[in-house]
Image 1 (cartoon, rainbow, N blue to C red):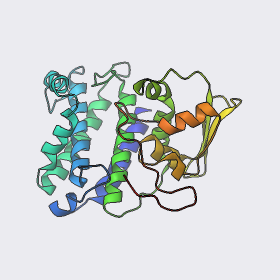
Image 2 (image 1 turned 180 degrees about the vertical axis):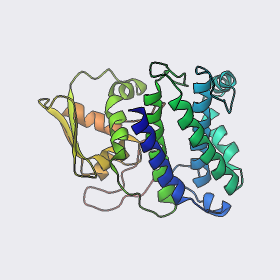
Image 3 (image 1 turned 120 degrees about the horizontal axis):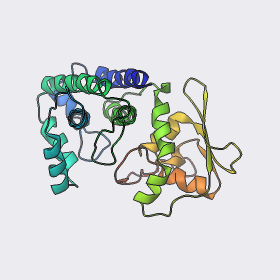
Image 4 (image 1 turned 90 degrees about the vertical axis):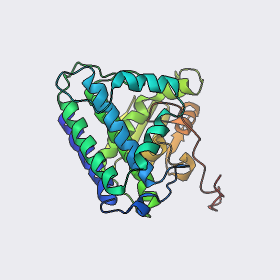
Length: 276
């Protein structure tokens, strides 16, 4: 399973990398939909996270070289929890374009090698709960795809939907309890059945098909909602039942605080609303 996940991570990363191949520093400083972040910040954040993940693996697996001191990273995160991630992106985003892209290339390969060297039952420490190598790889696919959406939007490109988004959808479903807790909401008790149509046309399902609360529709829409890049009302997803409707409004595939909720792009009559 890990090999399959790493193959998908490599493919997802390559799709983003190809989009910025040969990009000038000016191109990398094109603003993205993420406030205050340009394309360089998006690439820098992926690079920083890959390096941190490799360092986390190195702290528990012999023979893996660490780009950073893991304990020092934890201390820095504890001292500046609200700015730690942005500070890392800011630092790397200032590099010349060729240096930044080369560093990302190296960090991706190093992380893949580190995860392959991780025993299946080893839990890798992280800024949140520790996780196994398979979970780390899944999280890296999700984040690479999400930031790739921002890069594509900045450069006026349209990402090609692939079935690799199944990993994103899986995280969106698996984190249901977490997203309620992070918003201070009671733990959900009503089961919700999720049935999504993949880009290939395959049907993906989660949960009990007999549940009365359901979320159905395109997996591509659900994945974008789950990474907080799209408002559910701007999709063709259908939520049936109060629990399903509530969850679809807050679904979140990534760890940490949800940030600002996506702004609805269209009014009920089809008119485009002003962005906040």
